[in-house]
Image 1 (spheres, rainbow, N blue to C red):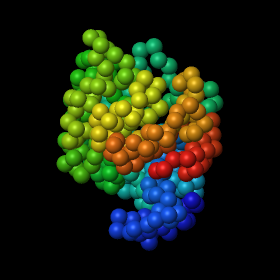
Image 2: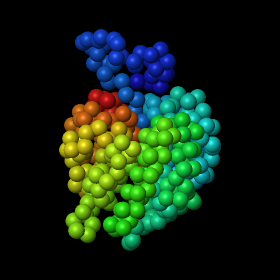
Image 3: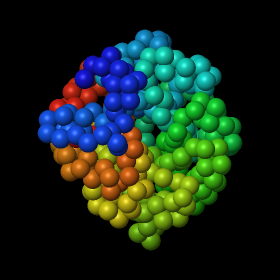
Image 4: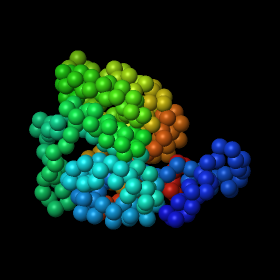
Length: 309
């Protein structure tokens, strides 16, 4: 579906089907388009700061309806204030649903190397605020921007001491976010599924020791699968806890990220369990792609053709 038709349907309320009874082909058609496809802007980390409006314009033209913001080399919200970024997104027909922040000051894990950019050089991370040191500021900015979700993108979980400290920060942030009218969530990588001393798995403790009333989960499907988990089983074990997803694909080695539908992940049973998960929005993401726009066009083509979202 092209962008103009999506905008028309939304503006006329055609997607609000709760009071409309449909059948046959019409029901099938509207069922396909009832949830907008979102994209995580980290996919465009290498290019978005050079042309924020142009990047968002191309995202909208590709058929995406929702965005989740992340880190910017310019700082803040791609060099803009929260309300300025929201206005820009809305003018282009995009709904700014969610924003990523760090849980603690950024540092590379022991023995890890900075991801490589397409030009072969290590990625440069600009100074960023974090929940450990700047929690209330980050909550207030997200509320000012009018997003629905604030998400912790990453936090230390490599030792039990780090994990306990991170859980305390997440619980504190969750309470503050709720007071500000936001929903707070935690985004995983695969490291949270690696057992620590005593066999304790960080993600299990993140689920059990954060307050489910204030801390939800944004499940990165690919990282969870790489970590040895089955997303559908996770949803069954913690129904309603996963309002947000990240959607990317992996090759057979589980080492290389690919556009959705071009790898080895079977997304159909995962999306069939969306109600159990409590999923409200999902965001296509491709970390450091060689061609971000080719990737998102490939991904949305597969999603629109193959997944009942």
